[in-house]
Image 1 (cartoon, rainbow, N blue to C red):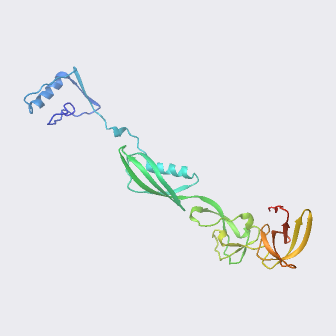
Image 2 (spheres, rainbow, N blue to C red):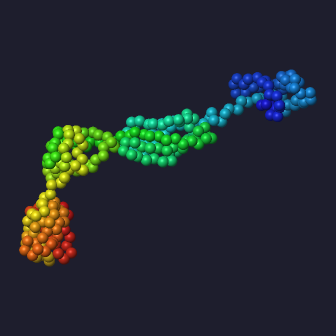
Length: 274
């Protein structure tokens, strides 16, 4: 009754709407309403504006909403964050089904875990906030030791092999393979077969050591002067090191080159870069 008379005090059911609407002729509906109204009211008037009356079922507007899948939304977000990441697991709790929209308010990463704060619009009327933890991986081929090795071992590529690892789970400093093959690195600790080659546990063997005698070549305006000096520090070719002249005791600095020799260029000339 309230679908027709909004202010009626006593509501009654006229009929059930099976499809989208009910259609009555004016006379038929009058008979139905007259019997119902006569039971509660002494004075009333029933007036219709048309010969045919349609009672249309008004659907809930929320039924027309398109809902989103939060897990799919998170997967798309991670893909935009880093397309190389592989998702292993998504952990979210207490998430409603009727999500109209979602927006990431914060995203952060710690090793193989990405943390998301998400605001969601539920049924187009209620905003909620949820958190998600996404376990991810990024697989790369990196060098690992092919056998157990002792501290002090000189390392080269023949003692390593390539293995696929999730680099997000590994706390290591990558190694330049070209430098590895130079034979100038030694282990600073014992390692096991399969362990990742970590530059943090490799020590570069110096080309010269403190106390070594070097040839010193001083170049100025096309003139070269040669003398000798004693290195004050360990050094590798290409580096700038200090040495003490063996005759005068004066401390000089120059670029260490193969020989070994120390090149000193005067007059504003630059050292060659190796």
